Length: 44
Image (cartoon, rainbow, N blue to C red; front, side, top):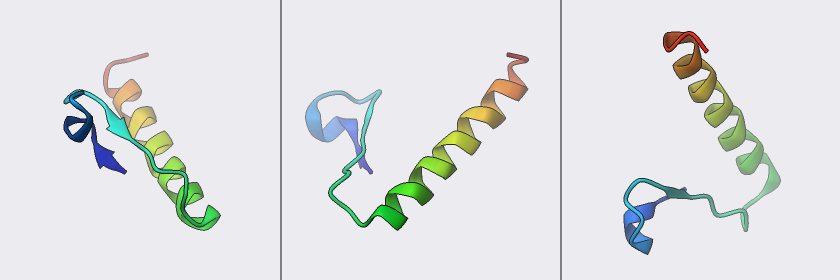
């Protein structure tokens, strides 16, 4: 994952999927957990 500021989008991230599947799966799992935690805090 790279910060969006590298691509002139500071409020975005870039997920490089040219990586081993196991790393991509772990990254997506962590992102899902982070979004889920935020949703719970915001009562969504």
